[in-house]
Length: 401
Image (cartoon, rainbow, N blue to C red; front, side, top):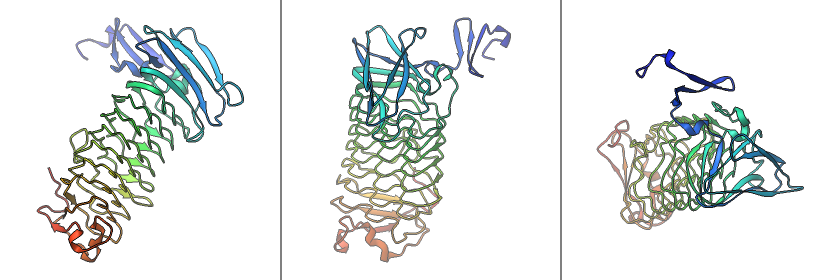
C-alpha cells in the first residue's frame, strides 16, 4: 500500500470510537486533509479581538477557547447577563474553539455569532462546537438551526477555505445565513458533502457576500426540501461561477432554488456548473409543491446564457419568473426539454427583461400554443412583444453540449 506495509505504521490515533489519523513516522498518511482534525480556529494577520455575541433572546451558550489546545477557558453568555465578550489574539497565535451545544440558534433572529476584525481567517472542523474534544470523524447534525447565522455579518471575515463542514445531512435552517453579509470573504469552503439539505438548510448562506467569486462543491446532494438554497448567493455581486446541482433528483416541498442567484449582477454564463456539467438536474421527482426554480436568476442584469432547462416533465410553477429582470440585450435564447407547457409551468419566465428573445423547445414534443402568453416579457401586450417559441434541432432526451 503506497510502497509500505501496514507493519511500518508507527502511530495510529483514535478519535472517539473511530480511527481519526494514521502516521508513518511524523508524516500523516490519512486523512490528507489536516483541517478536518483541527478544532475550529481563528487567525488574524494583525493583533485584534474575536468577539463572542448573542443576538435576540438566545438561550445561554457556554463554549471554551484556547491558544494552545491544552489550557482551555470557559465562557457563558446569557441574554439575562453577559451578551458579549472578546478574546485578544496576536498575529502569531490561533484561537481554538470547542463546545458541547447541540445548536447555536433557536431562530433566524435569536442566535450566537462570532464578530471578527479585518482580514480574519477561520479554519478547522466546525463540529468541535457540537462534539467538543470528540469532534473527529463526526458527520451528524441532529438539531435544527445548528449553525444558523454563526458568522453572519461577522465584520471583516476574509478567508473560509480552511473551514470544514463535514455533516452529511443538513437539518432544517442549520446553515441558514451562516456567512451572510460578510463583504470581505474572497474564497470558499471546499465542499458541503451532504446528500440531503433540509428546509431552508442553506438559505441565505452567502447572501450579500459581495467579494465572493467561488462556490462550494455540492455535487453529493441528491435530495432537498423546500427553500433549501433560497437566496443562498443572492446579491453576491462579484459571483461568476455556479455550484453543481446536477445530481439533485428529488425535492420534498416548494421552491428549493427560489432567488438562489437573485441580484448576482456579474453572472454572465449559467449554462455550466463549476464541475463543467449542465447546471440543472435532468429530472426532478416532486413529493409535494413545486416552483423549483422560481426567480432563481431574478435581477441578474449581466446574464447572457441561460442554463438548459433539462427537466422533461416539469411541475407546477417550476420556471416561474426564473429570469425576471435579466435585462442584458444579449440574453436572447432559452432551451427547454419540457414535454408539456402546462398552464403555469413557465409563468412570466422572462418578465421585465425589456426585450424579446427566443424559446427553443425539443422537436419531439408538442405544446399548446394558447399557453404561449407565459413567454410575454412584460406580462401583457401584443404578440410582437413576446418571446416566440420554436422547435429546435434536438429531442427531449438529447441535451446540448
